[in-house]
Length: 284
Image (cartoon, rainbow, N blue to C red; front, side):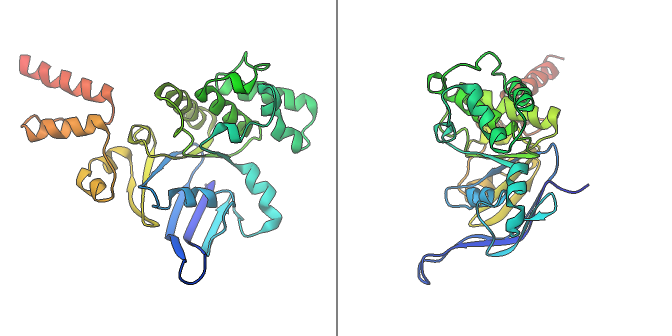
């Protein structure tokens, strides 16, 4: 099956004169498939946001190629199709909201595509339902919470019918409740709608929810794998200036005290279940 996004041997340098050249990406290879939820993490300056901006041709590689549904992002004649296929959601939802009501904002993209009015109405209703914002059609965006604004921004991207949504630090400005709202939405889009999701984040508790985690360091991929595989390497992550989830850290501390867990827990629920199993075993 053809990947949604294929990044092949991509390097990228920010040019500011010979002395100020910064290599932000170095020989990076990434594949993103339909319905996959991929988290990309890394310390500040690791290249994760630069990588995200290559996924819908905001940036073009210095070397290598990026393909979206087989279309090379270097082909300017394909730019519109590429940006329809890969929608971006950025850190501050206020920068993406352009209308005075929620439904007008969600309709903005399809209107600019020339979608017929009846189809726009259907897409707006469908997109708002997918992000649990039905009933807010006439609400003023500035009166919404941060999490609600970000879900409206995601709905605006969904209404464009993308094959992939890239969230570039889209939860960074939200409170814990808002982050949970957005993460619940994007997980459902991946699992139920088959939309690929790429989530750039510095919250380890969000990365554990992904199907796959990519760890960036100095423009290269330092680690890649399932969340449990990646977060089972705390010493490596610390060398990369990253933390492990708090529940994982607690399990590691218990292990240092002689209490061995049956697995590396990634969530509070997993840790509670493992402790319960251990206590049950002791009682037996």
